[in-house]
Length: 164
Image 1 (tube, rainbow, N blue to C red):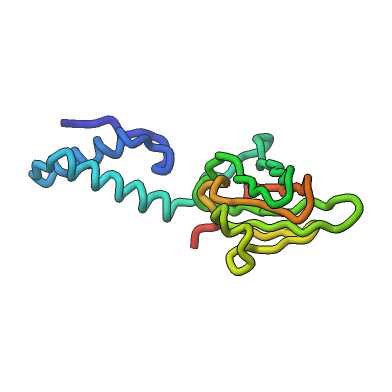
Image 2 (image 1 turned 60 degrees about the vertical axis):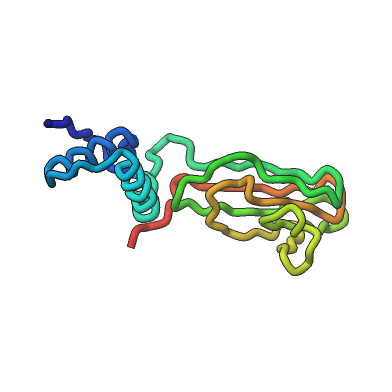
């Protein structure tokens, strides 16, 4: 059986195309692989692809990034980051916004309960920031010592990690 090959780069090829590639390879080797084995192989190939292929760079006038504000309305009540997936290879900058008046102390952690635990959280003052490699922004939790403390989650699409 002859299959048409896609002209798309490998990081854009859909799972169905990978399934066709696995079927063609098995056929060429004279193997009759059960569907469960083929799907497992496809899953592993996709994991490898995501780990080694940097995301495509955004060209010219396209959107270069995303900034989302997260506000702790009531101090002592943790707030979860938004349900946004970050493409593999991109860093997220977490920054506490500068506030008028008394400087504020903010906290972020990877678990809701850790925002109250001094050993498992990170402490921010106004305008502090950190760069993290995250797959999802909802894996972050925020809290603060004062009401209406805001944080920013920033990802720059044009700044993917370089392949080495």
